[in-house]
Amino acid sequence: MRFARPVVVGLLGLLLTSCALIREPGGRYYADDGPPSGSGPDPASVPNPVPRVEELSAIGNAPYTALGTRYYPVATGKGYQERGLASWYGRMFHGRHTSSGEVYDMYAMTAAHRTLPLPTYVKVKALDTGQEIIARVNDRGPFMGGRIIDLSFMAAKKLGIVARGIAKVEVTAITPADSSGVRSKSPVNRVFLQAGSFRLPGNAKTLQRRLVAAGLRSTEVIEARVNKTLYYRVRVGPVREVSDIDGQVAKIRQLTGVTPRVERK
Image 1 (spheres, rainbow, N blue to C red):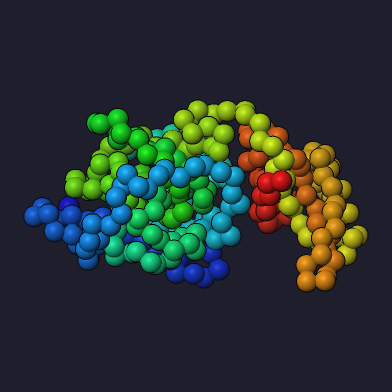
Image 2: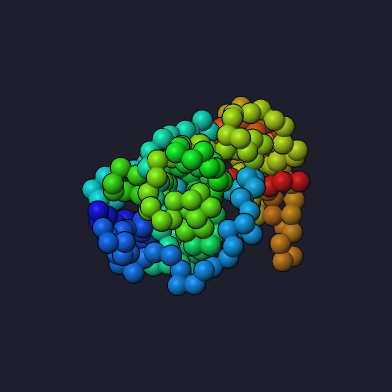
C-alpha cells in the first residue's frame, strides 16, 4: 500500500514537511524513505525521554489544512488516549525541519500527531506485544491511511515495528508528574508562567490587573535587566499543581494572545 504525508503549511509562512514510512509489497521503501543505510545507535543505548514542563512551540500549534481537511490543535493533551495505527518515518526527512521548527532526528525518540500540542509527551503501547515506549511529539501528521501517530525510526525500532511498518497501538498523553499516563495532581515546585515583559511599568501593572480580574491572583511584576535595559516582567505563580498548568496557560494565552513562557525556579 502506498501513502505519503503531504506538505503542511505552518505558522509564519513556513513550509514544513514530514512523511510516513511507505512499504511496497516486495519490501522496498518508497520515495527514498526507510531505515538508515548503517545500523545506527543501539536502541538499548537510547533512553525514553523524561517528560518535563516545556513552553509550547511558537509555531505548529495554530489551525492548519492538510489534504483539504482543517485541523485544530488542542491547548492541552491532558486526558488524551486513543487506539489506532502507528507508522514511522526515517532517513528521507532526517535533518529537515518538523512542524515545530525543530530538526527531525530519526535517532531521537520523537513522533508526529495531528492535533496534540507541540510538544507533548506520549506513551505508545503496541497492542499485540505489550511493548511500550515514551516519545516527544514535535511534528504534525499522519494524514492518510487511518493512522493516528507517526514515530521516528528509533521510536519505532524500540517498539519493535520497523520491519512491519505499521502496528496497532494505544497512545496516551502523559504529564511530567506521571509517566504511567494516569492523570495526577502531584505538586510541581515553583513553576512560573511569564505572561508579558514591558519597558514601561504602567503596561506591566495593567496586565497584572487584567490577570487578577480573570482569576489569576498569584500574579507579580518583577524587574529584570537584559543588556543593561530594564524590563518589567509579569508572571503568574508559583503554580503548584500539574493539573493547573494547562488551564492557566490557556487563560493567559486567551487574555494576551501569546503563549506564556514556562519557567521552573
